[in-house]
Amino acid sequence: MSNTQNQMLIIFGASGDLTARKLVPALYNLYKGGYIPENFVVLGASRSNLTDGEFRRKVIQESSFLKDKLKEDVEDFIKSFSDKFFYEDLGSDYDTYYGRLSKRISDLNTKFRTENNYIFYLSTPPSLYEVIAKNLSEQGLTKQEDGWKRIIVEKPFGYSLETARNLNKGLQKYFDESQIYRIDHYLGKETVQNLLVTRFSNSIFEPLWNRNYIHHIEITNAESVGVGNRGGYYDKSGALRDMFQNHLMQIVSLVAMEPPIDAKPESIRNEKVKALQSIRHLDENTFYSNTTRGQYLASTINGKKVKGYREEEGVANDSMTETYAAIKFYIDNWRWKDVPFYVRTAKCMPTKVTEVVIHFKPSHHRLFEGTNTDNRLILRIQPDEGVLMKFGVKVPGLGFKVETANLDFYYTDLVDAYVMEAYERLLLDAMQGDATLYARADEVEAAWAFVDPIIQEWKTKREKMHGYPAGTWGPQFADNLIDGKRGWRNPGPNLADTEDYCEL
Ligand code: BG6
Image (tube, rainbow, N blue to C red; front, side, top):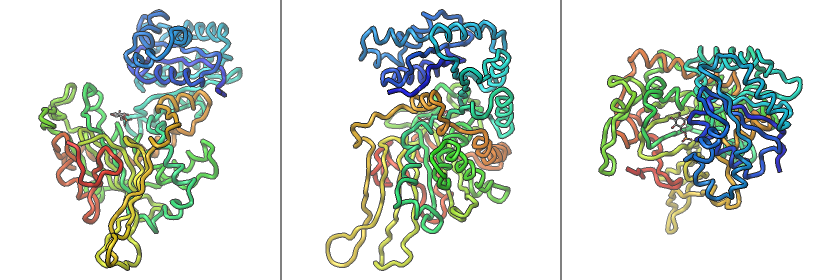
């Protein structure tokens, strides 16, 4: 079943949380699905002193993230998976002598015939990316003469436009751009990929997908949880860096891009980057009218007291970090001229939901007085994944009274389809050398070029920081950002819930 070449996956930061939580479960599913090549090795590397056996126990046999999966399988199967895992202690830091690591890679490569094909997965802070790349290069481990070499890096990719550029330059000193895979787990979601299919494989949507028919576009990413135990990280980051610059800008690019000439990775990424580069940057006239920021406050949800952001562990008690960010912007190109895009992301909202809402213009000529059909296409990314079309139908009876009806599709109806987890899909793509669902250097920089000035402007504190009680749809005047009387669609956990539905 697998057309994946024999290879070795070398994970830096392997004793950290991500390896056990995401990477190993994804590999396990791939192994079970028959996607792992015959000759395959995982070599964990980090600063902890572990033996191969201890590493296997930590990330497989005793891992709470695999517990349920392991119960379903026989011992021999689990053992054959575990036997592929090895560990190398890097010592006290990542900028150290890599000779031993290089020797270990070479020995494992010979023994398990992984054909000099290596993926280096950097599950480390970004400050170590260049250091690790340099050391790999010094050991000749980036050369592709006798087998390919790829490097996967995790988010955050930069802290600002400048740091993102420096990271790119740092990595590109040692790896060619075609070898670099910048992960954005939203691109691994089926429903995010389905944005491309909805647009470019149907003749009914694309002819309408422009300024002539679309009134505005709304993208919501809401999370019901707060920052939890990640306050220390989050307080230095905020919603714009944590979600907006990466995940949401990726969704924007897929909604706004022009049709690619074919489905090859570079053709798709070329169009995405053009869309991102066409976004009109905010300036002193629009920073205040086009942005809203907020921070969640303590409240009581379902009788349970919930902490405010400033009371979270690791968060400064006078923090000005946003947990709610909403931006209105325009894309200056032929297709989108004058169509507002409204994009928001927040923690501690009433429910967890991500969706794209395409609001169509009303019909040019209204035949039926008093009717107000609001045509909308809602692409639900999570949860209750699906597509919902809202359109007008005649109410049975005398006259022509019109009301809005739903036409809906749910992914769960595709009972036979196995939907891969985001990390599973993305890892497999990198193993097969397909970079379509990874962010290219220029995409990341174009997204930062738009977001960074907003972050800088918000630092000046001229834009108010609004409080909103945890468990509500954001600051009191959040709807004012949207022109006209419409306001945001505040969806419930189910795709077809009506607007006013709100789970508290
Ligand atoms: C991560 C952010 O990238 O995405 C988190 O750092 C956020 O703060 C998470 O909670 C959301 O991912 P998902 O897939 O649950 O929507």
